[in-house]
Image 1 (cartoon, rainbow, N blue to C red):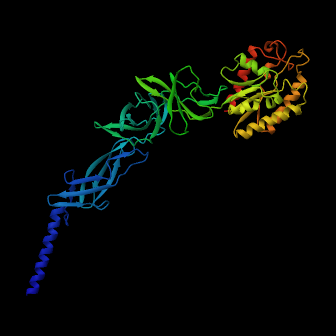
Image 2 (image 1 turned 180 degrees about the horizontal axis):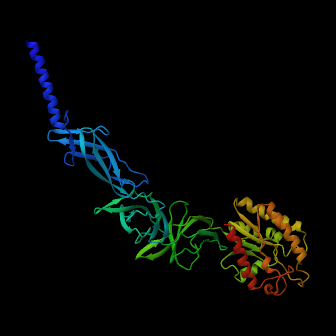
Image 3 (image 1 turned 90 degrees about the vertical axis):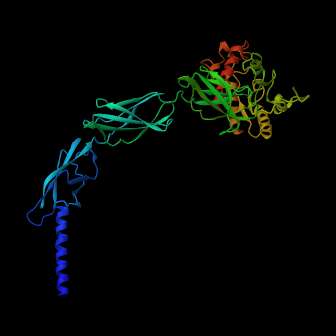
Amino acid sequence: MKKSLSILISLILSVLIAASSILVFGYDLGDGQIELTADNCAVTLENDVFAYTGSEIKPAVTVTYTNSTGSIELQKDTNYTLSFSNNKSVGKATVTVVGTGSYVGSVEKTFIITPRQVTSLESSEINVLSFAVKWGKLRSAEGYNVSVFKPNTGKWAKYTVDSSKTVYKATKLLWSTEYRVKVRAFVTIDGTKYYGPYSEEISVKTKPAVNKPSVSGYCSLTSKPVVTWKKAANAKKYIIYRSVYKDKGFKKLATVGEKARSYTDKSAKAHKTYYYKVRGWRKLSGKDAYSAYSAAVEIKAKKTVFVGDSIMEGVKLYKGIPGASFITKVGMGTYTFYEKNYFKAGGSTVTGVEKLISMKPDRVFFMLGMNEINYKGNGGVIEYYEYIIEDLQDEFEDIEIVILPVSPTKANSGKTIPKKKRINNYNAAIKKMAKENGCNYYDFTAPFKDKNGYLQNKYDGGDGCHWNTTSCKLFNKQILKYAKANK
């Protein structure tokens, strides 16, 4: 009897639980059906906003039915089906949940389709304080949002452009500054702006306020470093810096005006190597604006000496190379320079080569031979040239020796003055000698000659051999070409 009673109670409880479930979830095992409404049916999408793809967008859907006693998640195709409308174009799309089986009625849920990602973003104009960007037009866009990251604030600044434009110009920027830019399209739906995905970011760097100078340099014929540069756009002044190190220690040396294209470092000490940088300056928006520093240029202050006979003495007297160092003597040749005690050094009378060594040169220009080649063969002159070169190279490991040719003479010059054929023969011999002994040979004579290879009248000092003042200035110009080319 007790066992039967227990079974009966269990059956009653089962029926009550089942009835309770029916009441909670509105599910009628008989003919009853439940109507889905906006009040009892919640429709949730994986996202409420999607970017345009060109295809139908069908987000994942979750449907929950709720009454006063609880909630249950309904199953697709068992409890409901889905239908979509306007789900391909930019704008508001709708998904409709339609009850099926024991559920009837329908509930709608809307979602937004935004414009697709902006493409083809690129800079179209870059200036000192502004730049412009452009991008591909989107027909569905109501407008565009341009975002510019400003390094000076560390924030993104946002600007709106209407749909008729696909260009934006950013202004009031800093020069020589890199900005990041991205663009997205938007539409307005029911009073709210919806944005599509951003384009890929691009970087745009404004132009410098002053262009960086292109710098070179050489050692002058008076032993001083000369820094040279090309005009830098927008520069109103140039500032020169110097260091004894290539990568550090640069200090301001001088400031020069906008028309200057070179600076001679008169404070440089002979035999010493320096490094120079230059940057441009201007006033912009009330502020000092500088270019980037130029690359460092290396220049050695080469102690330079000119050695020669009466022609080189004329260069000295006529100030063809003002401030240069000379060892000259009328009538001097290679033999007399090497053997004769013509000069003073340290209180003693010494030879030319001893005098030259006492001056500790880094670079020497020799022009000897005019007084010897008429009565000595090439070999005799070259023999003493080689003695001179050997002594200098033994004394100074890195010395730069430049052998210059004997200059042209006039066809009708005196008998004691060498003529073209003899001069050409000698010059060819010393050119070969220079190469064999690790020296440079530099032929400066081309502009001195007429079409037949003789000294032009306008450069003749009066005897068909020596130079006038104009010749001395031309010599300076020609030798300066060598200095600039052999830094």
